[in-house]
Amino acid sequence: MLDAATFRDICLTNPANRQLLAALAELDIPQCHLTAGCLFQTVWNVLSGRPPAENIKDYDVFYFDGSDLSWEAEDAVIRRVAPIAERLGLPVEVKNQARVHLWYKNRFGADYPQLFSARDGMSRYLVRCTCVGIEAATGEVFAPDGFADLEAGLLRINLLLPQPGLWQAKAEHYRARWPWLVLAED
View: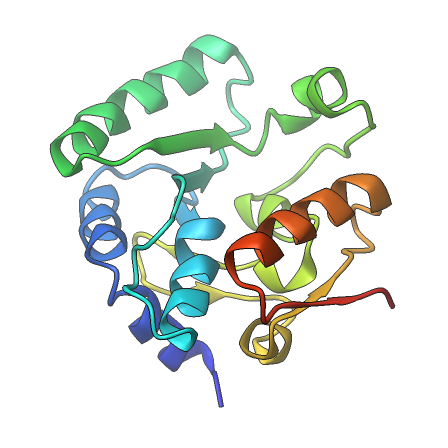
């Protein structure tokens, strides 16, 4: 049965996750988390008997700094992480969750609430079981919906961000790589 400690252990079997988390911990970025596909896809790979890092598109880093909502401030953090990503040979995407409400509608066509923490952002992924993160500074696991659906491969729409069309597309994208995943439309 998957729990927080087992989840973290599995995620760290992906050397990129392990190395990136260690490097991020040294940067002192506020509320910095490694999150999204590099974590849950590592779990699905391991459950499928595949290499942990297989087919992981990118490595997402969420942080929260509400003191400066400018693009320039976010870009400065992106530039701090860039040498690490380059050294590790990883595609890394860095996002300040304090700014998401400023650009989300233009990119995805829907309103998005102002957030108050990095974990607020992780809680709003389209697919509930993918709402996971590991805090860089502490190694603490964040999984507001637990691990049962992640382990079982149940893809449920996230009611904190109910966008059925985007959810369906995302879920089908995952199912193309892990055919054992199941759409749960409840």
